[in-house]
Each structure stands twice: as C-alpha cells, then as structure tokens.
Image 1 (tube, rainbow, N blue to C red):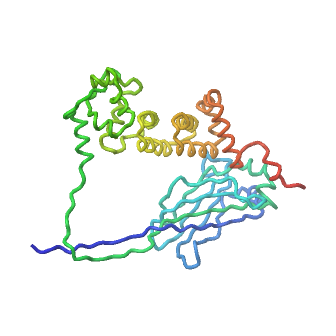
Image 2: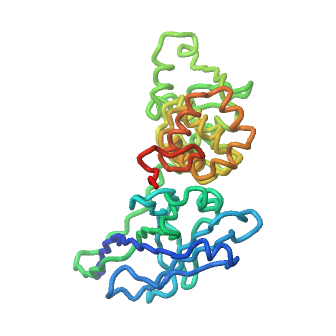
Image 3: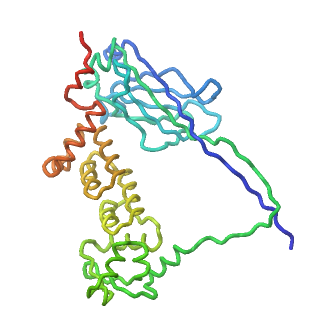
Length: 360
C-alpha cells in the first residue's frame, strides 16, 4: 500500500497594540450648538498600516436610554483583511495629563468595514461639565483610545514524507458520560431532595476531594454507600454531575448563579470558573449587586473584579436597584469595596483628592 504524504502548517498569532489621542477644542460650543456627533481624523496603527480607524463622539447619547451622556465609539473605516478582531480602552485625559474615567471592552470584538463598537453611556454630560477645568482644561476635551488588534503574524507551510496516521477522536468523556446517564455498573447512591441518583465512587473521588473525604471517613453513609445531599436542587446536582463525568460545561445560561456555589463547595475549580465566565457575560444593572455578593461569598475573584468594574461604570443606575439596597443593608464591606473602586476610577460624586484640584 502506498504511503500517503503528510502536510503540516504553523501559524503564529500575535497582537498589535497602539494608542490614539484626540483633543476637541471649544467643547462647550459644540454642546451649545446641539451638534449630534463629531468624528476624529482618520488614524492607523503605523504609517505602513493600510487599516484606517476613527473615533466617533455623540454629544447627547444615541437613543432615549443614553440621553444626557456622551457616547464614544471606535470605528473601522477600511482594512485589506476583514474582519478585524480588536479590543479597546477609552479614557479622558485630565488637566494633569492623567488617564481617568476609563472604560474598556470586556473581550475582543469583531469589526467589519464601516462597523463601530463602543459605549453609549461613556460619561454623563453634567458630571463632565461639573468638573471643569479638571476634565475640560481650557474648554478642551481630550480622549485617548488604546486598541489591541489580533493579527496573524506569519504562516509556515510544510510537507513531510512520513506516512499519515489517522488518529481516532478521544471518546473518554462520551463513554464516562454514558456510565452516568445510563447508570451502568454503579456502586453508590446519592439522594437529592428525595430523588435517587446512582453513581460511581471511584469517579466521584477522583474528581472531587469533598466526595473523596465523604467516602473515606468512617460513617454509616460510607459503609452503606448512600449519601444524602441536602444543599442542592436536583437540576443543579445533575448539571454538576454531568461536569464531573465529562469535564464539559453544562447549560449555565439559566442557572450559573446556582451551580457556582455547588462547584465551590465540592471543589470543582474549573466548573467554578465556567460559572464565573457565564455570570460575567450576563452582568447587567439589575443583577450587578447580587452578582458581587455571590462572588464574595464563594471567593470567585475574577467574577468579583468584573462585578466591581461594572458597578463602577454604571454606579448611578445600579444604586437604584433593589439588590443594591439589600447589599447596603447586609454587606457593608462590599459597599466599602465598591466605593473604593468608584473613587479610584474618579467616578465618585464626592470631591476628588485635593491634589487634583486646579488652583485659581
């Protein structure tokens, strides 16, 4: 039988980062004249780069919800290779040349030609005007945008002469999952809210130190191989068990807030981070305070950071929600942390530190 020729390739992915600063003079005049929007000069990452970008500033929001805010966007005007994946970070430059009022995209976003991404509630007009001349020195608004672009650095094609070996797909997760779903060869019973679930001690012990300890201690449960689980709902338990057997994320969009405490209690670090990711993607004004409490209770550091950043960026709206009022009454240490985050981002309605005041 003739040997097949094996082909191979190598792609290195790199990132290009660049900053663009834009100053708008006579800014108050723009506001008085009720101009809807202004656009920056076109720019690129370097003189040799054919990709062209610009910034767009809407002076009174872009819809009814964002009325009273400045809205800021990064737009891709043209690029030889489309789409472009990029993330960005906006700031206002204050009178001391410092970056303040920062707001960044949560992830890399897909830009097509003539498409823009940004923030429709970047900063309140009244807040901006109230801090003149700290934020509007000499009636000028200075913005800075840092852009990080994903780009294919280079490709190396190649050919070999070794015979091609077709490697079967690893089906371990599927096969273990079938053991769970069909209750095959089980040796222990877990009782959740009166429902019996049959499982395998070896798999549970290998995947969770908490289950391992339950089976190792000298107790009636370990001798009878029957454990009562009192702190989980059946659907949450099934989601957790599906992960234990397959390593795959369950459908978290509707119950990540319930699965996260289970993952934390049973020592499932990867599932816990999966829940953090799902909750970060679902952050909104209504659930931000609740999410912060959840992250703090279960030592979910990444989720807590994202929740604090979100509350900092939407402080006025979050403070009106019922979940924030609950947080204020029951978790004063989180109020202090949120205030500290707000102050460091210069979004507080209190006076800034004296060193930031411009003496007249």
